Structure formats: C-alpha cells, structure tokens
Length: 290
Length: 201
Image (cartoon, rainbow over the protein chains, first blue to last red):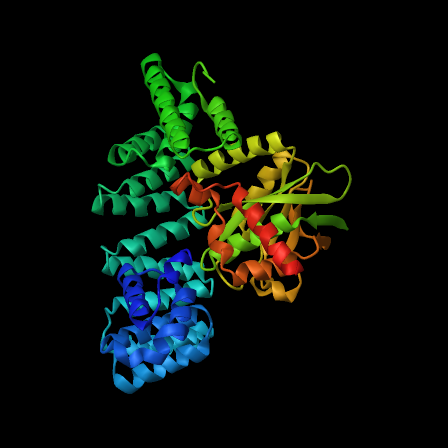
C-alpha cells in the first residue's frame, strides 16, 4: 500500500478510521499500523472509547509481526488488565510466545484453551501455524486435513492446503482442494482459473482449456486465464482432429487479440510489446499476422 | 572460485522484492552480460513470483517474455534468487532445483542465490544470500564465490527501505494481476538514481 494514503492522516481520529478500515478488510499492514500507533494513536488512545480494545489487539498483532516486543507487551498488559479471564487475550499471550519461537509454551496455552472449548477454530489454526513455522510440513498437512474435516466450509483453510500441496508438487491433491472450493463458490473466476493452472501443470490441456473458458465466461478480463487459453490451445494443436483443431485456432486467436487489446489499453511501450509479440508468435496456431 | 559481480540496480531490485513480501516466499531471475570467462556480471533482475511457484502457465509466460526481452537487450538469464517465507529455511528445495536445471538447459551458467533471512538487512554490509551452482553433474551445490557489489549498494538499499520504496517494485505476479504493472521496473532506474544522488550529498 502506498504511503500517499497515510499522508491524508492528520490526527488521531483519521488514524483511528484508517485502522478500522484495515480491521474490517483484514489486511496485513503491520508497519503502517505501528507508525500510526506511535504518531497518533498511543498518546490519544483513551479518546477512542471502547474501540481502543480492538485497537490494542490490532496493534499487538502488528507489533509481533514487526518484532517490536515493547509495543506488544504494552498492548498486552492493557488488554490483560481489562479482560483478565478472557480466552481471546490468553490466545494473544500464546501468540507472543510464537513470535519469540517458544512454541512449547504457546502450545501449552492453546491446549489449555481447547480443553474448555475444543472447537475453537482460531486456536486450532494457531496450533497449525506453529507447525508451519517450525517447517513440520508432514504433520502440518495431516493436522490441516483433520481441521478441514471439522470446518469444511473454511475456504481460507482449503486455499492454504492447496498451496502446501502445490509447494510439495502434489498436484492431484492440490486440484482436489480447488474442486472443493469450486463446489462452494462456483461463480468465482479465480478458483476456476487456478484449477485450470493446476490441470495445465499436470499436462491435462483439454481440461485446463475448459476451466480457463469457464473462468473467462465469469470474468473476460482475467489475464491469467487469457494467457492460459493461449497456452492450452497452442499445446493442443498437434493432437487435433480437424474440427477441434479449427476451434482451437479460433480460441487461440481470440485470446491473443484480447491480450493485445489489453496491452494497448494500458499504453504499453514498444519494448514490452516486442516481448509479448514474440511470445504470441511462438504460441500461435496457423498464420501469424505480425 | 567463481567471480560474481552484481550491479546496484540488480541487487536493489532483488532487495526491494524481498522487502515487499516479508511474509511470503519470493523468487526472481538475474540477468547477466554474456560471460566470456569464469566471471559472471549481473546487470539486472526480474522479480517473478510471490505465490504458486510450481504452476507452469505463469512460469512459461514469464520465461517466454523475459527470454525475448533478454535477446533484445543483449543479456542472458544466468541465475535466480529464492527467498523463503520461513525465517530459518535457506537450503534450496525441489522448486529451486527444477529452476536451476531449467536455466542450465538453456544456458551455460546456472547460479542460484538462496536468500538468507538473517543477512537481509543492508546494515550487515554482506550480500543477503548464499550462492549455489548447478553444475554439469546435475547437482546444485553451495559454492564459495567472490561476490562483488557495486559501490554504494548497501547505502542505496538502506535509503530505499527508509523511504518505503518497496511498494514501487512489480513482479510478474503483479503484472499478471494488473498489466499496467511493469515487470521490467523501468521506473525504478530513476528512483535508484535519485537515492544515489541524495546519498552523495
């Protein structure tokens, strides 16, 4: 996020609004959050009323992210004083241990919270995060699968599992995760396109092409899908019966023209266009016009 | 021992890319002038991705365009860098190996710069990576290399960090999400020169 947004902030009220926006959008703007805290919020924290507890929590998390343990401790102390028996604050204590890589202490706290509340999703996810941070990938995958049996609708977790499988190059399992997501959100063009990406990587060009087309039907501006269509039709050209071959040529040309239009719309310079056009030539089926 | 030199522009771009996404893994390519002897001179850097490194489509598109860009500008892809999201991870993984293998197939030199998170801060005054070489034996091995950075590189990186310039860099992922974002980062040349002239005062 550019610093120009922050130039509009002149006082604690503006800063409070900005922090509220970041909370609502769930974005990770840790350094900026700490800057706003130090400059505007900390001296005027009590003017925020009850919102200050949310701000303390938000700044605490940002401080952990930036390894500023002083600010983290201050926020945690304030929260602890106000909410001494809160499980939510207890979780924050554990997160502080995570930040200093004392995973055992963190896990002890998480387990104690789970004893009273065994389906606390936030805490279950923190335990998963501990495994990931320690690079214990096999256990991480196993536990994440167990978590998803309980919380099948957690799309963030499905995406995370997909990413882990991709980094392990287990494309079949990664594809399965996206299939679950597509079932839940059939109109999401990104999931269709990502699924197509995986199918392409597995060499299943026909299926990849189908899903790129679904994605483009939902959002004709998805550049990755346009490129994907270009690639799949180019790869399919050699193994084609005549009617399919003709369809592929048409799709290939259409994808190329759409991409060309987009590059021209943003006024891409000559040099960039040369690189793009070279690629088009390479991926063209039939006559290359340029 | 391999003689490697990296221009301020190349190193700054690598640094900014890694600084922009501290919570994610990132990788990118390093472009060099054609090398006549054992020394490699890196002059530019193209940041590639900060997600989904194993997916073929975006990778093929990137390589195709960058390859063409290299031919137009008389440079070649001689290396890549990879930074892990995990703080303690420094050894190349399968993804790095495959990329190194691919570069070797297409050129003579395939150097792999594995970013070491403990060395990233430019105040350390050391290059932020360990160097690996993909040799003819198809193995990716760490090598001790004499890495020379252009004068003033660390100071420039410090300045860029202070002034929050990491948001200016665009990688190929950014380009695919919004093609206005230029993966060649032509705008950064000016910014880096501006920082240079300030540091000189």
